[in-house]
Image (cartoon, rainbow, N blue to C red; front, side, top):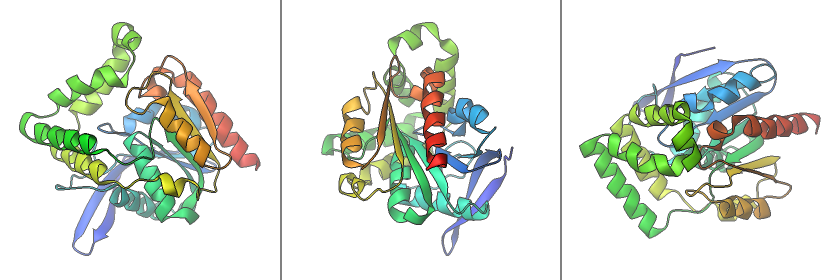
Length: 273
């Protein structure tokens, strides 16, 4: 397992360091976390997959132990970071998976670097751009992160990230999610919020996706509801949709066994095609 910083050229005079974990043999699987989390979001998937796959879980720019860049960080710039990380690790093609914001980055990656994708996993995410109201809400959140820190963000997001049952009876999951949010640098969170607000509508691109695609969503996800995944499933030829019961937005944490079963089954099907 690697915990090394990786330097990637973003432009001529700016470098960004990414932290990542890597382990395992076999085909490469790169998993991208959501906002405002870090690579520990994937630890239950990492532990299972590393027996048969080369698993890479980076901290996206401005999150976890990766370097922060201020201003606006677009989904395309994060996708470029991942492409250069794959170059650094000598990975030609990989299954790219992302949850929530990680899904936005995965879609941007698929559009920008189609030759680098073996398969695609989109979990609790959507293809649509933000509405004007959502853009305004992100601007408010960004300002709040910069002036008040991450606690108000954590307090507002937690009830939407996990089900009421998890909030009441699984303190270890709630604490893990809260700690990821609280450990996100406010400047990095604000930059990502601005970038998500600027992201383009990916719906026209969906019909061009020609690699095996798995869509996973928590049945009780209020942030990216099942209908968002159904829309993608209808547009992406041959895609597979798995709806996880008793899970909200972080379905991979709330129902990790069901999530892992769906993910492993999909990866095995990709290997045999």
